[in-house]
Amino acid sequence: MIRKMSVTTLIIIPIIVFLQSCSNKKAEDIQTILDKKESRTSAMLIGEKGFESKKLEYLIAHDYTKALYIIDKEEIEFNTIIKDIEKMDTEGIEKGKEVQQAAAGYYMALKDLFMFSRKEIEQEKLMRYGKEEKEIRAAQDKMLELGREKQHLYQKVFKADEKLFTARRYFESENKLK
Image (cartoon, rainbow, N blue to C red; front, side):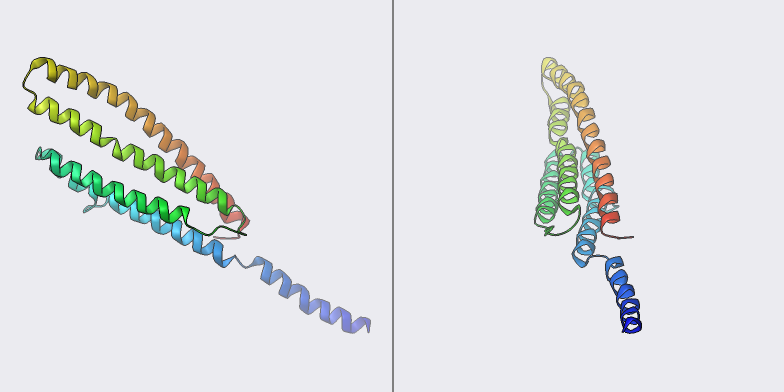
C-alpha cells in the first residue's frame, strides 16, 4: 500500500511541477500583443517608410499641409494601438493589469510627444510665411517655449518607458515567460 502511494506520488509530483512551470497561454498572448504593438510603433516612427520619414520629407519641402496630414494619420494609428492594449483580457493573469496600464500609459505619452509636432509645424509655417516682423518674432519666441514643453514630454516618455520596462519584467517573471 505504501509502495503504491509512493509510486503514485512520484508520478503526480513531476506532472504538477511540469504544469506549474508552463507559462500561461493568456500571458503569452498579452506578451505577443505588446511585442507586435512595439514593432508597429517602431515601423511607424523610425521605419524608412514610416510616418516620421514622410513627415520629414514634407517639412523639408515646406509642405506643411501634408506634414499635418501625416500627423493626423499617426494619431489614428496611436489611438488604435492604445485601444488594442486597453481591450486586452488580463483577468487571472499575474501582473497583467499592471503591464496593460504601463503599456497604455507609455503609448499615450509617446502619442502626446509626436502629436506635439502640430504646434511646432504651425509656428514654423508662421515663421516662413509671416508677413510682419512682429508676427515672425512672436512665432520664434513661441518655438522656444515649445522646445521647453517638448523637453517635458520627452521626460514623460522616458518615465513611462521605464515603468513599462519594469512592469514587463515583473509580468514575464510572474508568468514564467522568457
